[in-house]
Image (cartoon, helix red, strand yellow):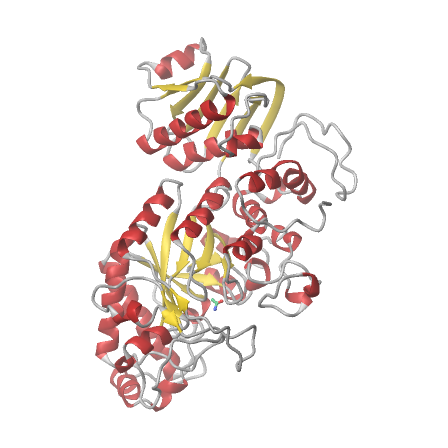
Length: 557
Ligand code: ACM
């Protein structure tokens, strides 16, 4: 980031970060910011919005005006004057202006702050929305609260900001299956994603341990599949917490969450994980299983189950199509995640339907893939075709690369970076979410004893704040294929995360580090500056908003 003003105090070692910079704390750091002398008063500011502006963006501006009025104690009003663009061009303006500017890249924005007038330009909803997030971040943290703070300095520094994201896909995966989280908590996750300019929620909705989405045609998925009898304690297969656990989202709740996300510039991508990770569905409809596999029970323990769908049966494929059809209708985005990870194919080796299907399709084992792996390719290809009829493109975990994969699929690289590097070199679009850097269920410290119990019990598997921050998605890639990297995602699996407090603790502040991986060009990243921003501002915001977070080791209490 280009910072014209020098740091007022020495940054020095990052421990005991008493120093403050003159630059405002903006996370993720903007691509370009030039600070100038002076400031602009936001208290009682008159706001002028271009009538051509997106109406949802206008609503977001009104929300900022209402909040400013509340916290500063002085009325901020929004008007949409005709001839606004001309007035701004002539330069005789006073107040805060929002202008439609189609020359600005999607999701990008410009903010020009002068002592008398501030002008914001963007071309789309997300651009305006992100400019508003940046303005909020330049204000005191009290802007995030609802208590009046009329004595605070409601001013933003004079500056010129030009900003746009490095990657179009900036995601978080939320696993609501291993543990169920309420609509309110999902919205709280969406709120903090939006503040830090993330724009995709990958919603993991089906699993061995719980089915979480209402499907009209298959009511037993939620009557039976949404609940497990108990949960083991840590990894002790002989233990039980003695509590039935479960829940699911009704279709109305899903619509509500989708709209809530849209109002924050976030697209939700549903995942229906298939053909493995389906034990909750099999407990609901055992007829979809392989020969000799029953009985089924919604799993009470973690790991990969050998019990998988019988994809040799047409009835099972209809089930998948029917379920995906109902799910696709609820989510307006262009992508649908079909999972595809960790599907043991042992049951298919002995199941007569699967073997008959392998024969019918002429699938053979060779040095590249087994006939059973090719049977999974058939499921992927068939679902890809089916979902295309619903206007959706598929995303799948990197296992979908084994054997053959049709054009147009997007690969999510989770078993390290290898899968993503290979997929991009083969011409597939890729989302990088390598477990070594991006798994938010991994411990945040190498000192495991000091942390709550988490999925990784090896210090070297820790995903510390600094490790995540320094992840570079193009590392190891052929420069000719980097254009296939759509973006980066952090994955919050919840085997060992059973409460809202712990969920937030694992998410924060790593989500902020992730936001800089996703948004900033490498030359604009700076870990010391990032820590100063956390210490001086961002942690105070999280506190104001009532989030539980882990205090970084580098920042003293
Ligand atoms: C995964 O972590 N099994 C995608």
